[in-house]
Image 1 (cartoon, helix red, strand yellow):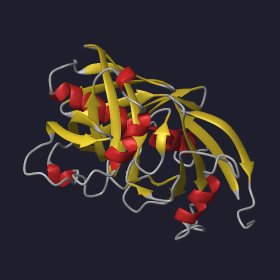
Image 2 (cartoon, helix red, strand yellow):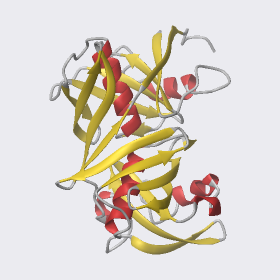
Image 3 (cartoon, helix red, strand yellow):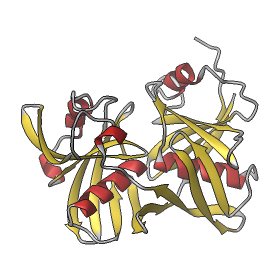
Image 4 (cartoon, rainbow, N blue to C red):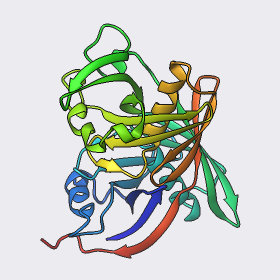
Length: 276
């Protein structure tokens, strides 16, 4: 099987061209095997490129533990660069079908290749039934207890469930996210974002990803952290989000969240997927 390894500010993915649905129904098992960093290629997730009946192209993403993810911001940028650079969809504006609906992507071209990529991530929701979470009111500055600590949380859906904890990053161990992910409040678990406000236009984020664990970057996590901090009045309408793998520009226009950043093709190759 041919593959391409890509990353968006360190959040890495294996891209597989599956226009013919050759691997349909086997995605979870494939992802668990291919994403193993010692016995296979290694990645945070696998992205399958497929035909769409409602958009230009369809993206299916599977986490490294084999679970399905409705949406992934960094993955979407990698996906967009992959289909653009290979002329699968050679358009400046690409509509991509995802598990969280159709996402609009703008390609900034440089000598025939995708350079920076702008994604309309849509509108986040603080409504508990969208997250989904067991609460009668929005989860904003709610306290929960895990890891023998008390956390003040803000939860929302930004493509997938996210729970944001504001504070100094030095006060948190990223692995604290493991138990918070599975707190009984969240019906389908949650991604966990630790967010430090540097200024009105700059924040730092570390994310524990549901189904993947710690990653160098999480696009939806950066957007969720931005929305949470904006909701409580701590930042402006446009910020730079710093993560371990780099930085993203996030801005709010007419209640829609836009994410702008690069994606990088690391290498291509082939692998025998039938070997035990």
